[in-house]
Image (cartoon, rainbow, N blue to C red):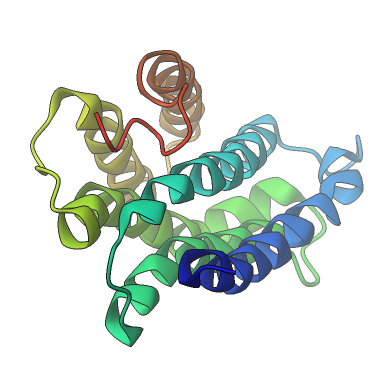
Amino acid sequence: MTLFEYLSVAFSIVLSLSAAQILSSVRAVLAADRRYWVHVGWIAVTLYAHVIIWWEFWALREVEHWTLMSFMVALISPGLLFVASNALTDAGTTKKWEDHYFASRGSFFVPMATLLLYSLFRDAFLLGNPVVVLRNLPEVAMTILCLIAWRSTDRRLHGGVVLVNLGLIVAGSAFTWLDPGGGSLQ
C-alpha cells in the first residue's frame, strides 16, 4: 500500500460521512409540504461537489512527499464540505426548508465560498501548479456568487444564483473535470 492510498482512506471517510449526511435528508428535503426549490438546487450542487472533490483527489497521487501539514491541507476540502452539508441539511425544528435555508445561509455559503477559494490554491501548495489559469474561472465565479448569496435575503437572487451555479458546474465539468484529477495536472 502506498502512502497516498493510506491517506486516501481518511479523505474518503470524511467525504463519505458528508455525502451520507445529505443523502439521509433527501426524503425530508423533497417532502412536498416542506420543499423549497432553491434549497433542493443547493442539495444537488453540494452532492455533485462531493463527486468533484473525490474526482480531483486523484491529482494528489502526484505528491511525492506527504507530511502531516500536506495531509491536513488535503483534508480541508472534505472538511469544509462536511460543514456546508450539515448547515444545509440540519433543519432542527424548522418546519419549512425555505426558512431553514435563509436562517442558515451564512453557515452554508461561507464554507462553500472558502472551499471554492481553497480549491484554487490547493494544487499550487501541494503540486506546484499555477493558481491563475483559465480552468479556474468557474470556481472564481461560484465563489463570488456564494458570497453574494451569503449577504442577500432576496429570494429571486437566490434562485438565480443556484441556477447559475448549476450552469457553471455543467460547463466546468465538460471542460476541465473529465479526466481523473480534475484537470489539475494539465
